[in-house]
Length: 344
Image 1 (cartoon, rainbow, N blue to C red):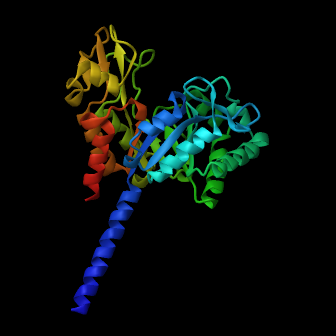
Image 2 (cartoon, one colour):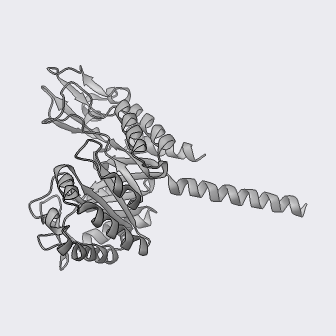
Image 3 (tube, helix red, strand yellow):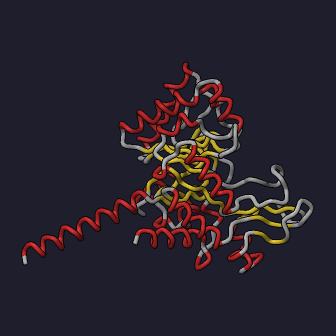
């Protein structure tokens, strides 16, 4: 009887451990842009349904300084003023209370005017100073790590100069000593992807599998974030050596319009304007170069992509959380439901 009871306890303990490990390794990463009003965005977000939240975007000034007194050197709020340290601490504390990790995302696709020159700051003569400033910032605000979002031509320029990998390698080394995370968001096109040599130094990689076409770029008449494209990018990154436990698939909570439609819609706007059509379909209108159409991800496609991400990778990344709606049609709810089912 004692042996049977002991076996029961051991088995249940192991099941608990494995389920905990599974959940810990499964990621739902959401970006929250400070420039849309950090406090309000944090208060409105379903923080308990996320494992990691990336607050975006922080940039250093021309001297590599990140904060002046209690005000960020270059991290705008919704009024175009820089947010305060008090606002950031409010967000960090609330995210931690919800059980999620919080990272600061650096740079961004379009750098603000207040940003310093990243190419210059990552040169050998300035790199250590910037890294030290970043580490002090992580410590000061009790962050769980940093997310690197240097993109496009700037990324290529820094890499070609030989300064990207040394920066990532040194930053990773210092963060690991503090038991902190280093993650990255990357596109998949040539000239906009992080170098393969940098992959070992990231804890996980957020693949930005969207924006294949938009109001001023790409081949009009196509979807901007199809399921097939997500699958193709997963295959690509695995061929490049990205392991399953580091691969996080990025999904969009927004769409683009062409022709008579406006350029960009949040999912909440799409739902309010087009109703139940956005549940099952990824396109409003007809796909063609001269057509009026909107391209986005429906609830069904977000659900299917989440299943794909859990099978082939370690979770889902969301750009971005303020685009979502509330209630039964929430895209985050759809993702969370799939992750819960995956855990069982």
